Image 1 (cartoon, one colour):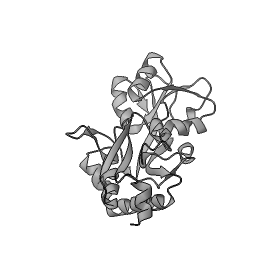
Image 2 (cartoon, helix red, strand yellow; image 1 turned 45 degrees about the horizontal axis):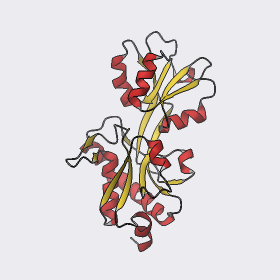
Image 3 (tube, one colour; image 1 turned 135 degrees about the horizontal axis):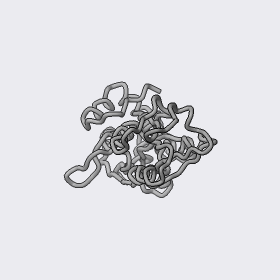
Image 4 (cartoon, one colour; image 1 turned 90 degrees about the horizontal axis):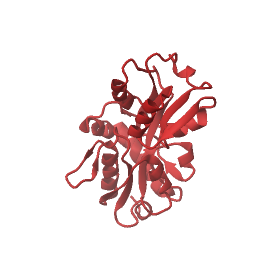
Length: 241
């Protein structure tokens, strides 16, 4: 620990951690004082403990808003999916956890594999600015992405507009499938969300500290203990960088 690291990651004497509330695998509860609980807040608290400072959770309705707050002095670190668009302004660690993303198709759909989705006339419902939406934006060339704000609204849009495909996190799609009799979740995944810790590009010493912390947290079993503590299914410890 050095004064430079502390000045970059806790300039106010508190670690302000940006937390995305929309990912139910990473934030799945509330503390008695109303703060977020889950794997993501636990990781932030562990980082603050290592720094020797209190943690303050700065919550955002979705990861896009959390990422956009870089440079506004709203947070010192942010826990969101590491994507190239975000990495233009944020230095990310390697992932500490991964979440499979795939597609759900309605009953009677002729689509049987992920490879068949990117075709003309296929409309994909997706939650705007989720990490997998950013991936789809870069990689879908023939199908059309239809966006809504938030997971619940996206599922509702998929149903009301009778869209061909619903993109999402596999654990959430398993729950969504219960509301669409005869629907199918496609085998495999089109990507895995790389849940990471980020800080502003200027914080080079802080970024190096975070990279080392995340690798240690994976190797020591700390990340696995948080997943077990919060009883999360569908979230895996990411491999070593």
